Image (tube, rainbow, N blue to C red; front, top):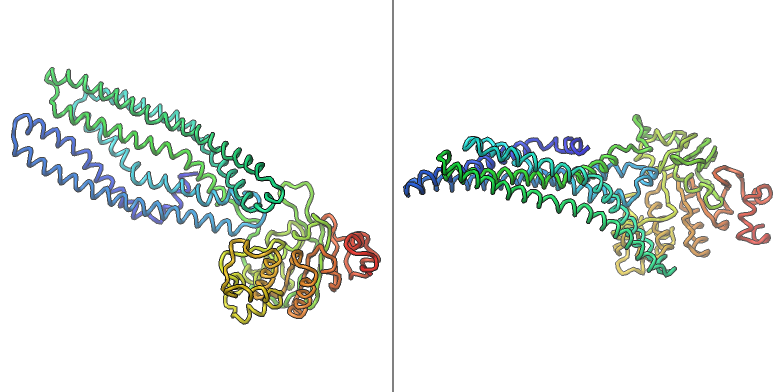
Length: 577
Protein backbone atom coordinates (compact mmCIF):
# COMPACT_ATOMS: atom_id res chain seq x y z
CA UNK A 1 0.00 0.00 0.00
CA UNK A 2 2.89 2.36 0.80
CA UNK A 3 4.55 1.70 -2.58
CA UNK A 4 1.23 2.24 -4.34
CA UNK A 5 0.68 5.58 -2.61
CA UNK A 6 4.22 6.82 -3.28
CA UNK A 7 4.13 5.67 -6.91
CA UNK A 8 0.86 7.50 -7.51
CA UNK A 9 1.80 10.83 -5.96
CA UNK A 10 5.50 10.94 -6.91
CA UNK A 11 4.80 10.35 -10.61
CA UNK A 12 4.63 14.11 -11.44
CA UNK A 13 8.08 14.62 -9.86
CA UNK A 14 10.13 12.21 -11.97
CA UNK A 15 12.52 14.91 -13.18
CA UNK A 16 13.63 16.22 -9.73
CA UNK A 17 13.79 12.63 -8.41
CA UNK A 18 16.05 11.63 -11.33
CA UNK A 19 18.25 14.64 -10.65
CA UNK A 20 18.56 13.94 -6.93
CA UNK A 21 19.38 10.25 -7.60
CA UNK A 22 22.16 11.41 -9.95
CA UNK A 23 23.49 13.84 -7.32
CA UNK A 24 23.34 11.16 -4.64
CA UNK A 25 25.21 8.76 -6.94
CA UNK A 26 27.96 11.32 -7.60
CA UNK A 27 28.39 12.26 -3.94
CA UNK A 28 28.47 8.55 -2.92
CA UNK A 29 31.09 7.80 -5.58
CA UNK A 30 33.17 10.70 -4.23
CA UNK A 31 32.80 9.36 -0.69
CA UNK A 32 33.91 5.90 -1.82
CA UNK A 33 36.93 7.25 -3.72
CA UNK A 34 38.37 9.20 -0.78
CA UNK A 35 39.67 6.14 1.22
CA UNK A 36 41.53 4.89 -1.86
CA UNK A 37 43.24 8.27 -2.23
CA UNK A 38 44.03 8.28 1.46
CA UNK A 39 45.63 4.81 1.14
CA UNK A 40 47.78 6.05 -1.78
CA UNK A 41 48.95 9.05 0.26
CA UNK A 42 49.92 6.79 3.18
CA UNK A 43 51.68 4.16 1.08
CA UNK A 44 53.33 6.41 -1.50
CA UNK A 45 53.67 9.68 0.39
CA UNK A 46 53.81 9.24 4.17
CA UNK A 47 55.80 5.95 4.22
CA UNK A 48 58.26 7.16 1.56
CA UNK A 49 58.42 10.73 2.92
CA UNK A 50 57.37 12.28 -0.42
CA UNK A 51 55.87 15.66 0.58
CA UNK A 52 55.05 16.66 -3.00
CA UNK A 53 53.01 13.52 -3.51
CA UNK A 54 51.11 14.20 -0.25
CA UNK A 55 50.32 17.82 -1.26
CA UNK A 56 49.24 16.99 -4.81
CA UNK A 57 46.96 14.11 -3.85
CA UNK A 58 45.76 16.09 -0.81
CA UNK A 59 44.60 18.84 -3.19
CA UNK A 60 42.74 16.19 -5.22
CA UNK A 61 41.06 14.96 -2.04
CA UNK A 62 39.98 18.52 -1.17
CA UNK A 63 38.49 18.96 -4.65
CA UNK A 64 36.59 15.68 -4.43
CA UNK A 65 35.36 16.60 -0.94
CA UNK A 66 34.04 19.93 -2.22
CA UNK A 67 32.26 18.18 -5.09
CA UNK A 68 30.79 15.73 -2.59
CA UNK A 69 29.48 18.62 -0.44
CA UNK A 70 27.94 20.40 -3.45
CA UNK A 71 26.22 17.21 -4.67
CA UNK A 72 24.94 16.45 -1.18
CA UNK A 73 23.48 19.95 -0.77
CA UNK A 74 21.74 19.67 -4.15
CA UNK A 75 20.37 16.21 -3.37
CA UNK A 76 19.00 17.31 0.01
CA UNK A 77 17.47 20.44 -1.58
CA UNK A 78 15.59 18.49 -4.25
CA UNK A 79 14.69 15.72 -1.79
CA UNK A 80 13.20 18.16 0.72
CA UNK A 81 11.19 19.98 -1.97
CA UNK A 82 9.87 16.74 -3.46
CA UNK A 83 8.93 15.30 -0.05
CA UNK A 84 7.13 18.54 0.88
CA UNK A 85 5.26 18.47 -2.45
CA UNK A 86 4.29 14.85 -1.81
CA UNK A 87 2.86 15.76 1.61
CA UNK A 88 0.96 18.68 0.12
CA UNK A 89 -0.55 16.58 -2.67
CA UNK A 90 -1.57 13.68 -0.40
CA UNK A 91 -3.14 16.05 2.15
CA UNK A 92 -5.06 17.78 -0.64
CA UNK A 93 -6.22 14.42 -2.02
CA UNK A 94 -7.45 13.24 1.39
CA UNK A 95 -9.18 16.58 2.02
CA UNK A 96 -10.89 16.51 -1.39
CA UNK A 97 -12.05 12.94 -0.81
CA UNK A 98 -13.44 13.77 2.65
CA UNK A 99 -15.23 16.79 1.19
CA UNK A 100 -17.04 14.44 -1.19
CA UNK A 101 -18.18 12.15 1.65
CA UNK A 102 -21.78 12.06 2.78
CA UNK A 103 -22.71 12.02 6.45
CA UNK A 104 -22.62 8.22 6.25
CA UNK A 105 -18.90 8.01 5.36
CA UNK A 106 -17.90 10.74 7.82
CA UNK A 107 -19.72 8.84 10.55
CA UNK A 108 -17.99 5.61 9.54
CA UNK A 109 -14.47 7.01 9.96
CA UNK A 110 -15.20 9.59 12.65
CA UNK A 111 -13.92 13.18 12.63
CA UNK A 112 -10.92 12.54 14.98
CA UNK A 113 -9.64 9.69 12.80
CA UNK A 114 -10.04 11.75 9.61
CA UNK A 115 -8.08 14.60 11.20
CA UNK A 116 -5.29 12.22 12.25
CA UNK A 117 -5.14 10.65 8.79
CA UNK A 118 -4.96 14.06 7.11
CA UNK A 119 -2.22 15.41 9.40
CA UNK A 120 -0.13 12.91 11.36
CA UNK A 121 -0.44 9.99 8.94
CA UNK A 122 0.51 12.13 5.95
CA UNK A 123 3.41 13.57 7.93
CA UNK A 124 4.79 10.08 8.59
CA UNK A 125 4.69 9.21 4.87
CA UNK A 126 6.26 12.56 3.99
CA UNK A 127 9.07 12.00 6.51
CA UNK A 128 9.75 8.55 5.08
CA UNK A 129 9.99 10.04 1.58
CA UNK A 130 12.40 12.71 2.83
CA UNK A 131 14.61 10.12 4.54
CA UNK A 132 14.49 7.94 1.42
CA UNK A 133 15.66 10.80 -0.81
CA UNK A 134 18.41 11.93 1.57
CA UNK A 135 19.63 8.62 3.02
CA UNK A 136 18.20 5.52 1.41
CA UNK A 137 19.19 6.37 -2.17
CA UNK A 138 22.86 6.53 -1.25
CA UNK A 139 22.84 3.58 1.21
CA UNK A 140 22.72 0.69 -1.33
CA UNK A 141 25.22 2.44 -3.61
CA UNK A 142 27.62 2.93 -0.71
CA UNK A 143 27.13 -0.63 0.55
CA UNK A 144 27.68 -2.26 -2.85
CA UNK A 145 30.54 0.07 -3.77
CA UNK A 146 32.21 -0.42 -0.41
CA UNK A 147 32.07 -4.21 -0.72
CA UNK A 148 33.52 -4.14 -4.28
CA UNK A 149 36.36 -1.78 -3.29
CA UNK A 150 37.09 -3.73 -0.10
CA UNK A 151 37.35 -6.92 -2.15
CA UNK A 152 39.73 -5.13 -4.48
CA UNK A 153 41.99 -4.23 -1.58
CA UNK A 154 42.18 -7.67 0.07
CA UNK A 155 40.02 -10.70 -0.70
CA UNK A 156 40.90 -12.84 2.36
CA UNK A 157 40.17 -10.00 4.78
CA UNK A 158 36.81 -9.47 3.10
CA UNK A 159 35.61 -12.66 4.76
CA UNK A 160 34.75 -10.47 7.75
CA UNK A 161 32.10 -8.76 5.58
CA UNK A 162 30.54 -12.12 4.72
CA UNK A 163 29.84 -12.63 8.43
CA UNK A 164 28.89 -9.03 9.33
CA UNK A 165 26.29 -8.12 6.70
CA UNK A 166 23.95 -11.16 7.16
CA UNK A 167 24.02 -10.76 10.97
CA UNK A 168 22.98 -7.13 10.65
CA UNK A 169 20.26 -7.98 8.12
CA UNK A 170 18.74 -10.73 10.27
CA UNK A 171 18.76 -8.56 13.41
CA UNK A 172 17.08 -5.62 11.67
CA UNK A 173 14.47 -7.85 9.99
CA UNK A 174 13.43 -9.48 13.28
CA UNK A 175 12.96 -6.11 14.97
CA UNK A 176 11.06 -4.56 12.03
CA UNK A 177 8.62 -7.50 11.87
CA UNK A 178 7.63 -6.88 15.49
CA UNK A 179 7.36 -3.11 15.01
CA UNK A 180 4.64 -3.09 12.33
CA UNK A 181 1.64 -4.26 14.46
CA UNK A 182 2.79 -2.01 17.31
CA UNK A 183 2.77 1.04 15.04
CA UNK A 184 -0.77 0.25 13.80
CA UNK A 185 -2.01 0.08 17.40
CA UNK A 186 -0.17 3.31 18.20
CA UNK A 187 -1.91 5.21 15.38
CA UNK A 188 -5.29 3.87 16.54
CA UNK A 189 -4.57 5.01 20.09
CA UNK A 190 -3.57 8.40 18.75
CA UNK A 191 -7.05 8.52 17.14
CA UNK A 192 -8.54 7.78 20.58
CA UNK A 193 -6.59 10.60 22.24
CA UNK A 194 -7.76 13.02 19.52
CA UNK A 195 -11.36 11.86 19.95
CA UNK A 196 -11.35 12.24 23.74
CA UNK A 197 -9.65 15.64 23.55
CA UNK A 198 -12.09 16.84 20.88
CA UNK A 199 -15.08 15.71 22.96
CA UNK A 200 -13.76 17.43 26.06
CA UNK A 201 -13.08 20.71 24.29
CA UNK A 202 -16.44 20.70 22.48
CA UNK A 203 -18.40 19.53 25.54
CA UNK A 204 -16.62 21.77 28.04
CA UNK A 205 -19.87 23.40 29.23
CA UNK A 206 -21.56 20.06 29.81
CA UNK A 207 -18.56 18.80 31.78
CA UNK A 208 -18.62 21.87 34.02
CA UNK A 209 -22.39 21.77 34.42
CA UNK A 210 -22.28 18.19 35.72
CA UNK A 211 -18.98 18.72 37.59
CA UNK A 212 -17.40 15.80 35.72
CA UNK A 213 -13.94 17.34 35.54
CA UNK A 214 -12.29 14.55 37.50
CA UNK A 215 -14.03 11.83 35.45
CA UNK A 216 -12.94 13.44 32.16
CA UNK A 217 -9.40 13.86 33.50
CA UNK A 218 -9.29 10.15 34.29
CA UNK A 219 -10.73 9.37 30.86
CA UNK A 220 -8.06 11.40 29.11
CA UNK A 221 -5.38 10.06 31.44
CA UNK A 222 -6.39 6.52 30.55
CA UNK A 223 -6.29 7.19 26.78
CA UNK A 224 -3.01 9.07 27.16
CA UNK A 225 -1.49 6.24 29.24
CA UNK A 226 -2.48 3.65 26.61
CA UNK A 227 -0.78 5.72 23.91
CA UNK A 228 2.27 6.19 26.14
CA UNK A 229 2.52 2.47 26.88
CA UNK A 230 2.38 1.64 23.19
CA UNK A 231 4.96 4.35 22.40
CA UNK A 232 7.25 2.91 25.08
CA UNK A 233 6.81 -0.60 23.68
CA UNK A 234 7.84 0.58 20.20
CA UNK A 235 10.59 2.75 21.68
CA UNK A 236 12.05 -0.21 23.57
CA UNK A 237 12.28 -2.18 20.33
CA UNK A 238 13.76 0.77 18.46
CA UNK A 239 16.29 1.24 21.27
CA UNK A 240 17.64 -2.25 20.56
CA UNK A 241 18.43 -1.37 16.96
CA UNK A 242 21.47 0.89 17.35
CA UNK A 243 23.18 -1.03 20.18
CA UNK A 244 22.97 -4.22 18.10
CA UNK A 245 24.37 -2.46 15.03
CA UNK A 246 27.17 -0.74 16.95
CA UNK A 247 28.13 -3.98 18.72
CA UNK A 248 28.49 -5.74 15.38
CA UNK A 249 30.42 -2.74 13.99
CA UNK A 250 32.90 -2.64 16.83
CA UNK A 251 33.45 -6.41 16.83
CA UNK A 252 34.00 -6.39 13.06
CA UNK A 253 36.48 -3.49 13.39
CA UNK A 254 38.43 -5.45 15.98
CA UNK A 255 38.41 -8.48 13.69
CA UNK A 256 39.66 -6.42 10.72
CA UNK A 257 42.52 -4.88 12.72
CA UNK A 258 43.48 -8.26 14.19
CA UNK A 259 43.54 -10.15 10.89
CA UNK A 260 44.84 -7.12 8.98
CA UNK A 261 47.85 -6.86 11.29
CA UNK A 262 48.72 -10.47 10.52
CA UNK A 263 48.34 -9.77 6.78
CA UNK A 264 50.68 -6.76 7.00
CA UNK A 265 53.17 -8.74 9.05
CA UNK A 266 53.24 -11.49 6.42
CA UNK A 267 53.62 -8.93 3.62
CA UNK A 268 50.31 -9.66 1.98
CA UNK A 269 48.88 -6.18 2.69
CA UNK A 270 50.10 -2.58 3.03
CA UNK A 271 49.34 -0.21 5.92
CA UNK A 272 47.42 2.15 3.63
CA UNK A 273 45.25 -0.70 2.36
CA UNK A 274 44.32 -1.63 5.95
CA UNK A 275 43.37 1.99 6.64
CA UNK A 276 41.27 2.09 3.49
CA UNK A 277 39.69 -1.29 4.32
CA UNK A 278 38.66 0.01 7.76
CA UNK A 279 37.19 3.09 6.09
CA UNK A 280 35.22 0.95 3.65
CA UNK A 281 34.04 -1.27 6.49
CA UNK A 282 32.73 1.81 8.30
CA UNK A 283 31.06 3.03 5.12
CA UNK A 284 29.41 -0.36 4.59
CA UNK A 285 28.22 -0.43 8.18
CA UNK A 286 27.08 3.21 7.98
CA UNK A 287 25.03 2.36 4.91
CA UNK A 288 23.48 -0.52 6.85
CA UNK A 289 22.78 1.87 9.75
CA UNK A 290 21.11 4.32 7.35
CA UNK A 291 19.01 1.47 6.01
CA UNK A 292 18.27 0.47 9.59
CA UNK A 293 17.08 3.98 10.36
CA UNK A 294 14.84 3.78 7.32
CA UNK A 295 13.51 0.38 8.36
CA UNK A 296 12.58 1.90 11.71
CA UNK A 297 10.31 4.35 9.89
CA UNK A 298 8.91 2.01 7.23
CA UNK A 299 6.48 0.03 9.46
CA UNK A 300 4.80 3.15 10.82
CA UNK A 301 4.72 4.83 7.41
CA UNK A 302 3.24 1.66 5.91
CA UNK A 303 0.46 1.61 8.50
CA UNK A 304 -0.18 5.32 7.89
CA UNK A 305 -0.25 4.75 4.12
CA UNK A 306 -2.86 2.00 4.57
CA UNK A 307 -5.01 4.36 6.65
CA UNK A 308 -4.65 7.13 4.06
CA UNK A 309 -5.40 4.78 1.18
CA UNK A 310 -8.46 3.50 3.03
CA UNK A 311 -9.89 7.03 2.90
CA UNK A 312 -8.86 7.56 -0.73
CA UNK A 313 -10.39 4.22 -1.78
CA UNK A 314 -13.71 4.94 -0.06
CA UNK A 315 -16.31 6.22 -2.49
CA UNK A 316 -19.07 8.49 -1.33
CA UNK A 317 -22.55 7.02 -1.23
CA UNK A 318 -23.68 10.36 -2.72
CA UNK A 319 -22.40 9.98 -6.30
CA UNK A 320 -22.42 13.02 -8.64
CA UNK A 321 -24.58 12.40 -11.72
CA UNK A 322 -22.79 11.43 -14.92
CA UNK A 323 -25.17 13.47 -17.07
CA UNK A 324 -26.43 16.15 -14.65
CA UNK A 325 -29.56 18.22 -15.12
CA UNK A 326 -28.38 21.82 -15.38
CA UNK A 327 -31.77 23.56 -15.67
CA UNK A 328 -35.07 23.04 -13.87
CA UNK A 329 -38.38 23.68 -15.60
CA UNK A 330 -40.47 24.43 -12.52
CA UNK A 331 -39.50 26.45 -9.48
CA UNK A 332 -39.57 25.20 -5.90
CA UNK A 333 -41.71 22.07 -6.24
CA UNK A 334 -40.63 19.32 -3.83
CA UNK A 335 -41.99 15.78 -3.86
CA UNK A 336 -40.88 12.72 -1.90
CA UNK A 337 -42.18 9.37 -3.20
CA UNK A 338 -41.90 6.26 -1.06
CA UNK A 339 -38.51 7.33 0.30
CA UNK A 340 -36.68 5.13 2.76
CA UNK A 341 -33.27 5.27 4.38
CA UNK A 342 -31.26 2.63 6.19
CA UNK A 343 -27.81 3.03 7.71
CA UNK A 344 -25.32 0.28 6.72
CA UNK A 345 -25.66 -2.69 9.06
CA UNK A 346 -28.77 -1.32 10.81
CA UNK A 347 -31.52 -3.82 11.65
CA UNK A 348 -34.34 -1.36 10.94
CA UNK A 349 -34.54 1.52 8.44
CA UNK A 350 -34.73 5.07 9.79
CA UNK A 351 -37.35 6.03 7.20
CA UNK A 352 -39.93 3.79 5.50
CA UNK A 353 -42.17 4.68 2.56
CA UNK A 354 -42.24 8.44 3.14
CA UNK A 355 -44.57 10.41 0.88
CA UNK A 356 -44.62 14.22 1.00
CA UNK A 357 -45.42 17.09 -1.34
CA UNK A 358 -44.42 20.74 -0.79
CA UNK A 359 -45.37 23.50 -3.21
CA UNK A 360 -44.27 27.12 -3.74
CA UNK A 361 -46.14 29.60 -1.59
CA UNK A 362 -46.94 26.95 1.03
CA UNK A 363 -45.44 26.00 4.37
CA UNK A 364 -45.15 22.31 5.07
CA UNK A 365 -44.34 21.26 8.61
CA UNK A 366 -42.91 17.94 9.83
CA UNK A 367 -43.41 16.93 13.44
CA UNK A 368 -42.84 13.77 15.40
CA UNK A 369 -41.30 12.33 18.50
CA UNK A 370 -37.55 12.26 19.05
CA UNK A 371 -35.90 9.68 16.78
CA UNK A 372 -38.77 9.52 14.33
CA UNK A 373 -36.48 10.49 11.40
CA UNK A 374 -37.36 14.15 10.86
CA UNK A 375 -33.79 15.42 10.38
CA UNK A 376 -32.90 12.43 8.24
CA UNK A 377 -35.88 13.20 6.01
CA UNK A 378 -34.72 16.78 5.41
CA UNK A 379 -31.16 15.58 4.78
CA UNK A 380 -32.36 13.59 1.76
CA UNK A 381 -33.34 16.75 -0.14
CA UNK A 382 -29.90 18.50 -0.37
CA UNK A 383 -28.28 15.02 -0.63
CA UNK A 384 -26.46 14.98 2.67
CA UNK A 385 -27.12 11.28 2.05
CA UNK A 386 -29.18 9.52 -0.60
CA UNK A 387 -32.41 7.63 -0.06
CA UNK A 388 -31.91 3.87 -0.11
CA UNK A 389 -35.49 3.43 -1.40
CA UNK A 390 -37.87 5.62 -3.35
CA UNK A 391 -37.26 9.03 -4.91
CA UNK A 392 -36.76 12.64 -3.87
CA UNK A 393 -37.84 15.01 -6.65
CA UNK A 394 -37.12 18.72 -6.99
CA UNK A 395 -39.08 20.35 -9.78
CA UNK A 396 -39.86 16.92 -11.17
CA UNK A 397 -36.22 15.79 -11.33
CA UNK A 398 -34.64 13.19 -9.05
CA UNK A 399 -32.09 15.00 -6.85
CA UNK A 400 -29.55 12.30 -7.79
CA UNK A 401 -29.63 13.56 -11.39
CA UNK A 402 -29.41 17.30 -10.65
CA UNK A 403 -26.09 19.13 -10.92
CA UNK A 404 -24.81 19.57 -7.31
CA UNK A 405 -24.24 23.33 -7.77
CA UNK A 406 -27.77 23.79 -9.12
CA UNK A 407 -29.21 21.73 -6.26
CA UNK A 408 -27.27 23.78 -3.70
CA UNK A 409 -28.58 26.98 -5.29
CA UNK A 410 -32.16 25.68 -5.32
CA UNK A 411 -32.30 24.19 -1.81
CA UNK A 412 -31.31 26.08 1.34
CA UNK A 413 -30.93 24.14 4.59
CA UNK A 414 -30.70 25.58 8.09
CA UNK A 415 -29.42 22.59 10.11
CA UNK A 416 -30.52 21.55 13.55
CA UNK A 417 -27.11 22.47 14.96
CA UNK A 418 -26.12 25.66 13.10
CA UNK A 419 -22.37 25.98 12.51
CA UNK A 420 -20.56 29.26 11.96
CA UNK A 421 -17.05 29.46 10.56
CA UNK A 422 -14.16 31.47 11.95
CA UNK A 423 -14.22 34.89 10.30
CA UNK A 424 -16.67 37.76 10.54
CA UNK A 425 -20.44 38.13 10.48
CA UNK A 426 -20.21 39.20 6.82
CA UNK A 427 -18.04 36.28 5.69
CA UNK A 428 -20.45 33.84 7.30
CA UNK A 429 -23.52 35.45 5.73
CA UNK A 430 -21.86 35.48 2.29
CA UNK A 431 -21.07 31.76 2.52
CA UNK A 432 -23.93 30.89 0.16
CA UNK A 433 -23.72 34.04 -1.97
CA UNK A 434 -20.24 35.61 -2.16
CA UNK A 435 -21.55 38.51 -4.28
CA UNK A 436 -24.18 39.69 -1.79
CA UNK A 437 -24.07 43.40 -0.98
CA UNK A 438 -24.05 44.87 2.52
CA UNK A 439 -27.65 46.01 2.00
CA UNK A 440 -28.70 42.42 1.26
CA UNK A 441 -26.89 41.23 4.37
CA UNK A 442 -28.63 43.77 6.59
CA UNK A 443 -31.99 42.88 5.04
CA UNK A 444 -31.43 39.18 5.75
CA UNK A 445 -30.40 40.01 9.33
CA UNK A 446 -33.55 42.10 9.77
CA UNK A 447 -35.79 39.25 8.59
CA UNK A 448 -33.92 36.80 10.83
CA UNK A 449 -34.40 39.12 13.84
CA UNK A 450 -30.61 39.43 14.15
CA UNK A 451 -30.13 43.02 13.02
CA UNK A 452 -30.37 44.52 16.50
CA UNK A 453 -27.68 42.43 18.14
CA UNK A 454 -25.32 42.73 15.12
CA UNK A 455 -25.69 46.52 15.22
CA UNK A 456 -24.72 46.43 18.89
CA UNK A 457 -21.47 44.64 18.05
CA UNK A 458 -18.46 46.94 17.91
CA UNK A 459 -17.70 46.42 14.21
CA UNK A 460 -21.14 45.45 12.91
CA UNK A 461 -20.83 43.16 9.90
CA UNK A 462 -17.06 43.04 10.37
CA UNK A 463 -17.32 41.76 13.96
CA UNK A 464 -15.31 38.57 14.48
CA UNK A 465 -16.99 35.17 14.78
CA UNK A 466 -15.05 32.39 16.52
CA UNK A 467 -14.83 28.87 15.14
CA UNK A 468 -18.21 27.21 15.54
CA UNK A 469 -19.74 30.56 16.58
CA UNK A 470 -18.76 29.99 20.21
CA UNK A 471 -18.59 33.74 20.94
CA UNK A 472 -22.32 34.20 20.31
CA UNK A 473 -25.29 32.61 22.05
CA UNK A 474 -27.25 29.64 20.74
CA UNK A 475 -30.18 31.82 19.69
CA UNK A 476 -27.89 34.28 17.95
CA UNK A 477 -26.19 31.41 16.14
CA UNK A 478 -29.55 30.15 14.90
CA UNK A 479 -30.59 33.57 13.66
CA UNK A 480 -27.28 34.11 11.85
CA UNK A 481 -27.65 30.67 10.23
CA UNK A 482 -31.17 31.60 9.08
CA UNK A 483 -29.88 34.92 7.72
CA UNK A 484 -27.11 33.06 5.86
CA UNK A 485 -29.73 30.94 4.07
CA UNK A 486 -31.87 34.00 3.32
CA UNK A 487 -28.86 35.68 1.64
CA UNK A 488 -28.62 32.60 -0.60
CA UNK A 489 -32.26 33.15 -1.70
CA UNK A 490 -33.07 29.52 -2.62
CA UNK A 491 -36.40 28.36 -4.00
CA UNK A 492 -36.84 25.70 -1.29
CA UNK A 493 -36.19 26.52 2.37
CA UNK A 494 -35.58 23.66 4.83
CA UNK A 495 -35.64 24.63 8.51
CA UNK A 496 -34.52 21.73 10.69
CA UNK A 497 -35.73 22.68 14.18
CA UNK A 498 -34.06 26.05 13.57
CA UNK A 499 -36.12 28.00 16.11
CA UNK A 500 -35.57 25.82 19.19
CA UNK A 501 -33.18 28.27 20.92
CA UNK A 502 -35.46 31.29 20.41
CA UNK A 503 -37.88 32.69 22.94
CA UNK A 504 -41.58 32.69 22.00
CA UNK A 505 -41.66 36.40 21.10
CA UNK A 506 -38.61 36.20 18.81
CA UNK A 507 -39.94 32.95 17.33
CA UNK A 508 -43.26 34.57 16.46
CA UNK A 509 -41.63 37.70 15.02
CA UNK A 510 -39.21 35.63 12.97
CA UNK A 511 -41.94 33.38 11.54
CA UNK A 512 -44.02 36.43 10.59
CA UNK A 513 -41.07 38.06 8.81
CA UNK A 514 -40.17 34.77 7.11
CA UNK A 515 -43.73 34.35 5.85
CA UNK A 516 -43.46 37.67 4.01
CA UNK A 517 -39.91 37.00 2.75
CA UNK A 518 -40.60 33.47 1.51
CA UNK A 519 -44.14 34.05 0.21
CA UNK A 520 -43.26 32.71 -3.25
CA UNK A 521 -40.90 29.96 -2.06
CA UNK A 522 -41.43 26.45 -0.75
CA UNK A 523 -40.88 26.20 3.01
CA UNK A 524 -40.47 22.97 4.95
CA UNK A 525 -40.15 23.26 8.73
CA UNK A 526 -39.16 20.54 11.17
CA UNK A 527 -40.02 21.51 14.74
CA UNK A 528 -40.68 20.08 18.15
CA UNK A 529 -42.59 23.17 19.26
CA UNK A 530 -46.26 23.00 18.26
CA UNK A 531 -46.64 26.78 18.30
CA UNK A 532 -44.06 27.00 15.52
CA UNK A 533 -45.94 24.80 13.06
CA UNK A 534 -49.62 24.93 13.98
CA UNK A 535 -50.39 27.54 11.28
CA UNK A 536 -48.63 25.61 8.49
CA UNK A 537 -50.57 24.86 5.31
CA UNK A 538 -49.79 21.18 5.72
CA UNK A 539 -48.49 19.22 8.71
CA UNK A 540 -46.86 15.81 8.25
CA UNK A 541 -46.73 13.59 11.34
CA UNK A 542 -43.89 11.06 11.59
CA UNK A 543 -43.77 8.12 13.97
CA UNK A 544 -40.97 5.55 13.94
CA UNK A 545 -39.92 6.54 10.44
CA UNK A 546 -43.41 6.40 8.88
CA UNK A 547 -45.95 9.05 7.92
CA UNK A 548 -48.94 8.49 10.21
CA UNK A 549 -50.89 11.62 9.34
CA UNK A 550 -51.10 14.61 7.01
CA UNK A 551 -53.36 17.63 7.26
CA UNK A 552 -53.89 20.95 8.99
CA UNK A 553 -53.77 21.50 12.73
CA UNK A 554 -57.51 21.25 13.41
CA UNK A 555 -57.87 18.18 11.18
CA UNK A 556 -55.04 16.30 12.89
CA UNK A 557 -56.31 17.26 16.35
CA UNK A 558 -59.58 15.57 15.50
CA UNK A 559 -58.33 12.52 13.62
CA UNK A 560 -54.70 11.75 14.55
CA UNK A 561 -53.91 10.36 17.98
CA UNK A 562 -50.11 10.72 17.60
CA UNK A 563 -50.36 14.41 16.76
CA UNK A 564 -52.89 14.99 19.49
CA UNK A 565 -50.58 13.46 22.08
CA UNK A 566 -47.70 15.69 20.96
CA UNK A 567 -49.89 18.83 21.10
CA UNK A 568 -51.40 18.07 24.49
CA UNK A 569 -47.93 17.42 25.92
CA UNK A 570 -47.20 21.11 25.26
CA UNK A 571 -50.57 22.90 25.33
CA UNK A 572 -53.80 22.65 27.23
CA UNK A 573 -56.99 21.55 25.46
CA UNK A 574 -58.17 25.16 25.28
CA UNK A 575 -54.87 26.44 23.89
CA UNK A 576 -54.77 23.64 21.32
CA UNK A 577 -58.27 24.54 20.13
